[in-house]
Image (tube, rainbow, N blue to C red):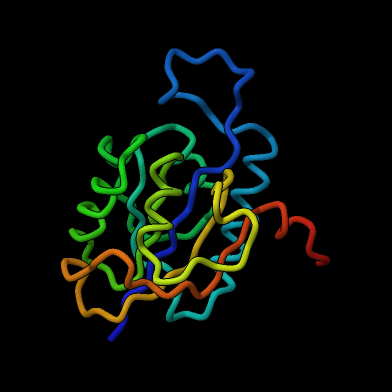
Length: 169
């Protein structure tokens, strides 16, 4: 049996908007468009790779990213994933119940987590810095998330919204 993780950094946020806190910052126009194409990409995955559950930071920009993906899956928003370290993300994922999970978070933690999870990093220039909207599809040969160990994931795909937007329709 295998479990699947889709690890996504929130789409591009709006730094020009006055918000009461970083946590409340929304997406900008590019971010909203990127979230939509990421949703299209995820919905186009084979059924056995599409997520059943989302674990997300409670920040406005991760909530908005997930909403614009239009995935119709169970959603859990938690403060502990806001600017979380890889260790916190690992513990949250180890508590997941679905076989296929989408996790949304923030840099620098999500980039570090992506690197720590996989056995080999993909041959992609943007995996290193994990830009906004970066998404990695990872498979683990385990039966339950509580058995998850770092360095055991196999990258099935890695995308950034800019490439998805550039693809001909």
